[in-house]
Length: 156
Image (cartoon, rainbow, N blue to C red):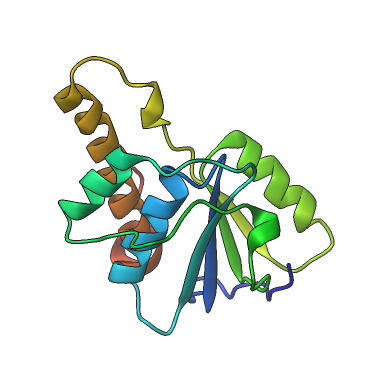
């Protein structure tokens, strides 16, 4: 995975979101980023391991008017394009894998610790609330990182 080191404050030309199985956090981040960022930025997602599509992700994305369409989880090995300026990891195993892959490359890797909503229990509404929380946190993080220069350097 080759890329160029980013100039501070510059938008990347390509972003890869990575989580464990590319079933929940990274595809959610990918869809949100595609809507929120300029169309000139290539956005993709992948997982460390193969996963299964999660219907709760479809449901919380639909609430935002977004859809995964026919897309199914894919691994880092499945990616057709391996050139990214920025890799955003959302889970510890994804972060370790990204650091290993990019050890000798000029690629920025950022770790955004993100809760795994698949651990939520209870009623359907309680589970949906956990997925919505992840969606909203990802939207905020994408906005702060890429869209709002005046909030980039402020404390959380």
